[in-house]
Image (cartoon, rainbow over all chains, first blue to last red; front, side):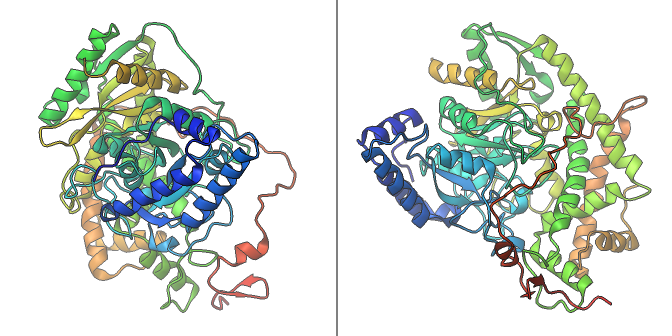
Amino acid sequence: MMSENWRKIPEIVRDVRSGAVSAVENVERALAVAECCKNYNIFVSITKERALQRATEIDQKVKAGVAVGELAGVPYVLKDNFLDFGAKTTASAKMLEGFVAPLQATAVKKLEAAGAICIGKSNLDAFAHGGSTENSFFGVTKNSKDTRRVAGGSSGGSAVAVALGVAPFALGTDTGGSIRQPAAFNGVIGVKPTFGSVSRFGVVAMASSTDTIGCFATNAFDARLVMNVMSGKDSWDSTTIDNDFMRHTSRKLRIGVILDFMTDDVDREVLTIVEKYVKKLDKKGYDVKTIKMSTLKYALPVYYVVVPAEVASNLARYDGIRYGHRARVAKTLPEIYGHSRDEGFMPENKRRVLIGNFVLSSGFFDAYYLKAQKVRTLIIEEYRKAFAKFDVLLCPTTPTPAFKIGEKTDDPVKMYLEDVMTVPPSLAGLPAVSVPAGRTKSGLDVGVQLIGARGSDAVILTLAEQMEDYGEQ
Amino acid sequence: MSEITDSEMKHLAELSNLFLGDKEAKSLKRDLTRILAYIDELDEVDVTGVEPTYQVFDMETVWREDEEIDYGVSRVELLELAEQVKDNSVVVPKVL
């Protein structure tokens, strides 16, 4: 299934403002493509009624000569862990199957204020735990290039939506690669910003020390535009920082290729494609060198201590009482907790809660949790040293292209290893984007990851944009 | 180490408030053992004298003003989210 590509967002907005193409037409087009793509299982719900109503309002404003925002009439797809009006917010889990949000996420509010229109909520691994969108209570999302393969995850639905032309952009959340990895698997750009860039108010929490909100787009310019609208301080999320998306740099960028992730452990074709991208950078005149970063290989085991610990805390709120699934069989209060959580969580949710409680429990805390947080310090320190010499670090986004559905579901560690290259920047709170770098012989997408120092989100996106302009030369 | 015993598994399920079936507990126990074996790679790292990082940007505790914030959500709307409600309260089984 291929649809005609959306033009760049400023062009779409220009046409909405001039009346050449109405917001309603844009929404109808997005809904039509979504309908055609049904077999990919992108959506948990479609917010048709609200989308058309909002589009009509924008068109009426245009007709009346009232100013409309910088995303006026642009349809988008929202990962189903953002609280939003017009549909349930399920986080793709039975626990929240019937949850109707009484408020909207700050990111959603900002997009709405700029005139963007949500047309549907996309599928994810339940509670964003996973790297394939196979862990969803609502079924598996299929890869945009090969329906026998995974979409990647956890923001699989959003990535496939942009890849198939449902909408010009989509939102995701990225805790350890949940935007970058599906972006790489589907040939779109995926942005994970500096920690704190976008308010997490109204987004289902996973791991509070690494959760970030970002987007998918077909090009770096659009991605930056969307990030710029969403970013900035929010008094309802005390971890938020000032917006860095418009900070420019004109100096010649120094780029470091991380050798530790360019080894024989990486798929041959992925390596070749990434090496080609590096050559292009070199040819274009960037100062490209290599760097060894020996602590990064410990990032994944650190991640699978720290994140489950935070998951165990964040998922403790699901008690089956105030909201969410309540088990019918339960007769006593402990039974309500125990059965509701057993029925409401997917196996991967349970794994992470159990691991989290294990590493936090007395007797194991020092050996696991404290140790992991100390290794995390070493990783951050190594990045700090690297960014004294380089502006941008580069490696593949993933060690392989999209794998087959079911291929890694029997062994959680095999699945976790897919995150080996995306997890390190997450632990350090650094901005990182996955940009399409090419396709394998069988037509699967491969992404390259560009990592920046804290707050240099605009630098890596500008680099991505310059490389797009450079094209296939 | 890292071999999870049956009694540890039971204790963990209790800490996690999860009533697991026998079959699921067994398969999760196997998964946990595998995951912990992988995490044990951290044993080879020397962290003598290294401080832990709990949050990435050395933020200070941020206090908000001691004033009422209107989130635009009413009590009625919140109560609608609960499965069982009576007289403006959420109903749970008898505790005492």
